[in-house]
Length: 256
Ligand code: NAD
Image (cartoon, rainbow, N blue to C red; front, side, top):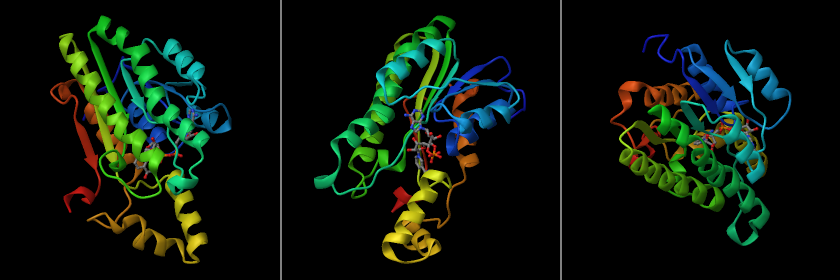
């Protein structure tokens, strides 16, 4: 991949103040794209923008319809849309807070729908667009106690395939794909390590080895930059034949 591959391209990455989103925004910016970084308003977003060559912050709470619609409006000119913002909540279904369910579905399924809905017409008009939805290995298989997360991530794959088929009918170069990582070294996972270590009274390294990495064939955490490289690959003009696909970066989880 040449360093100027995304010169002249405008990209929007949601949840870009941290983890995978920040790595994706950084990688696309380093490859020449102008990047709009979305996240909740706050210092983390401002700090993230300052580290990048050509970037601006577009704060919005994507768990609200108003926030997602406003962002879709502000970012209607983007060539690349990466739906990444997300969060995890672990609870047995019988005590799963319905408000938490609503929030997670709004953030991880409804917001991508609203953003694609608002942004894809511009991609059709300009004849080019790349949409990458960050799903998860939990978009393809379940784990107990993650009902909202697993449901949202499965739904996001359905949305990905539907959008890919609709875009294909337009005969323009607009693709839509999903990326499905297993555990990536980000604050979202570091928090789970700390929580589970506390609950089980064991060390974080034990939780990592015996719980988090137990389904991986390769017993290693994925780095955010590994995901960023996969996203950039899908965003390249040459990746036009890849649409409606699910790219797994699961360290062999699904090979079992
Ligand atoms: P992270 O917590 O480091 O980053 C998530 C970002 O989303 C944060 O900056 C957060 O502020 C932002 N966000 C949360 N609520 C928001 C809202 N209402 N509006 C706007 N932004 C909001 O997590 P991460 O691990 O980098 O996760 C990024 C994506 O990757 C998520 O969709 C997650 O489900 C997915 N994913 C993560 C892993 C993993 O192991 N870390 C694996 C598979 C998929």
